[in-house]
Image (cartoon, rainbow, N blue to C red; front, side):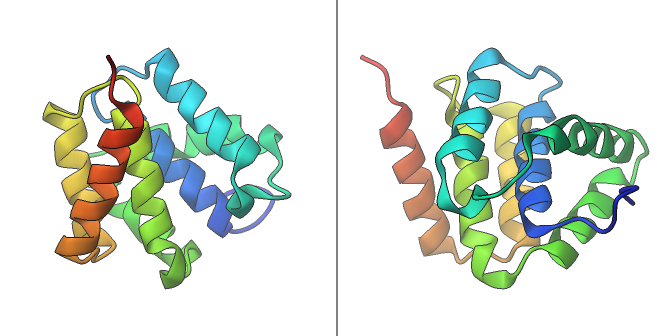
Length: 139
């Protein structure tokens, strides 16, 4: 998978954010800034080497090319991510998707996939989504 070993939990979170951002085939600056801020400021990324970002991007883009790539990517993410971080992963996904001020089309479908794959409880998902909307609302 990665030349320096298996995907870590931090790698999985980064890969998921990249996949959500890329889901509409347009990675926006606001989404890159959101990912960078999360990696630089959130406790879950303490000790993460930002030098791994280009490698994680390549892994995500390579996996998303084939038809069944998303399924393979989710398999790797689930293998690397402890269940206690599933809601964190979903919150990060929502924040990236909401970074440009709206969630629709492919990004909304991708969030649905993330909810399903990580088995996020409906009520918890709604609360996480509402928080993301509140944090990214514009005047």
